Image 1 (spheres, rainbow, N blue to C red):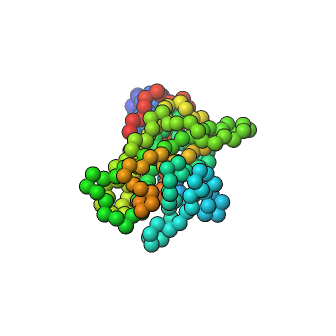
Image 2: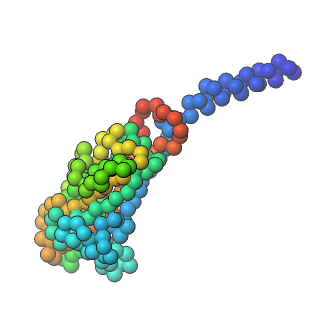
Image 3: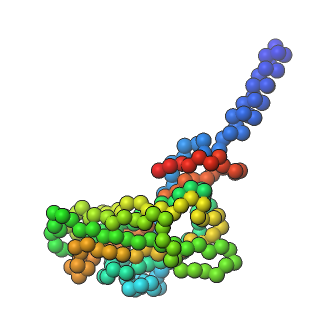
Length: 217
């Protein structure tokens, strides 16, 4: 009996040392975290009036009961300021994409129109001077083809990303979202409406130095 108990104890100790010691963010298959920032929650407004380029205004989207930012010209933009999420694994790439729709009363063409949204960023360490977002993503968000044949369809751009080891925990992250280009939309009868920005990143939940294996998209 003593031998059995001794072996059981040895097994438990070996399990704790060999197995539990290897529990780590990189050998747990976390789902990647996604944070969605609706345009009404962004920091670039006084009341409902944008303070960035073009000074776009927040208004109700059609009669749906929620708001968006109507874009009247290329170059119109809005900014946001937020802390780098504490559970973000800053040793991995961070991805960004834009949610939007189109306000139009026209029937859209079979070739479909496209829009290009530009997202830029900057970082500010604690006690450093704040900076406006001006740094391009490592891989920019590609032009998105609006597939709706009428207005107010949900549209989401492809992902752009910032390279691994760009951000640091404790920094403030300044972001700017701008309508960079519009193909076939005249911006008089057809107006893109910015709904929000989505950020996707690998999570780091465990304490300690992670094993360097990327949690890919």
